[in-house]
Image 1: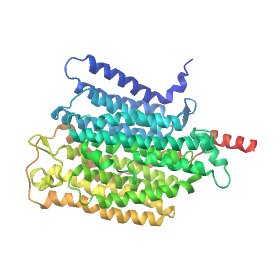
Image 2: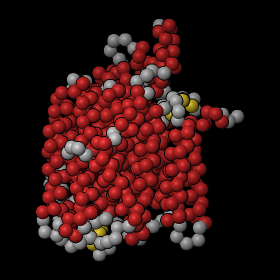
Image 3: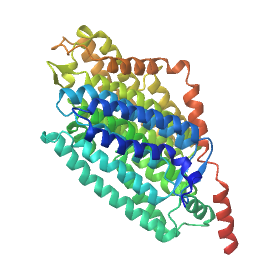
Image 4: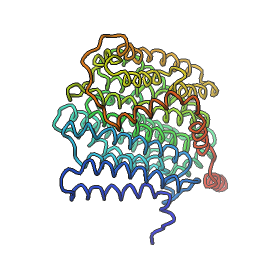
Length: 497
């Protein structure tokens, strides 16, 4: 018999799964090109899923025999994922029509990838984690190579697939080690196991955590598992790159936080050093490797690696304040990157996309509004006050300092200063160099709305940060309050001993 109340927490995911299958049928049976219709319905599906999510995610609920969890943390991150996915679909419309790649399967792949992301964020077991991860990854592999008549796109999809398979294998191996030494894959039972453990934890369990962390580091493109990012960002169609830069990154970071803080929260002393090293390497490589890049998509790839390093600073702290900093950072990161890629998608000359940084020369003279918006995003990415990007870094660095990770915070600030060079170089090109050929106009009402909205958010975040900061604080707090099931399991294990 179907447990209908048990399915209620997963209602947004169930709705998206049904919507995806329905949209496939609409695309197949619709006469003529159904891409714009299916894209509009996909965005509407994301909106409905968000409304359902807000309605069902009131308190911590575990369902499906402990495989699925909904709490404040899941609500916050899922809303970010849905927003990022919806904006990516909207930004894609003009591009895929101009580039003769308008197929109704394109937005449906985005929808199924987003479904996998939502499952990831709510995973409460290593098995459900892997299922959600593969659903997301398989859709992303296809969409990266969607422009199959170009070598660059096919190469990007192949590289992403091969390296993604390696990372999935590492994650599965780590999960098998964890199961072998803990006897369970459920997050609550793992938390009870680590809470009850005395002395040094089993070395096999620590090795398993290392392999799981390596697999998740690939998904967030953290060093040293970043090698796929520049090539995939450059080779994939630009709106697909924009999608990669926001929604999957947010979902993978949410999973990273939940896995380490939840089931392995009492082993923070063991995994903290892994995150510290990964964060340091990501910030440093992202800052220096982007300096000589002349392709703006490759530059944004290294920028994303750097920003992942900054977000991991908050996770390295291992405190509610640190997790709150990660959530605030990812919310601001979403808006900064969506705005930046909206500008990149407007870089067209005679109907042809251009990706060179030098093509932005003199943009202030030919399109001052777009130049102003891109300058705002560049200053925000660099962390220049009083823009939103500054506050994202402020919260994670303050958490690191309060956790006595002084070296990590100092190196993070220095890396941010180095990274400012290539952001300010773009501003210098736009405002002080002689103009090159002007970009095509108009840019479209949808893109204009995104640019204006993202610019306003970055400019005026300082006036009203409370909604995001308070929501992030409440969401982070749900990860640090052990549920009764964990405490009961720990007491039962202690009684048996």
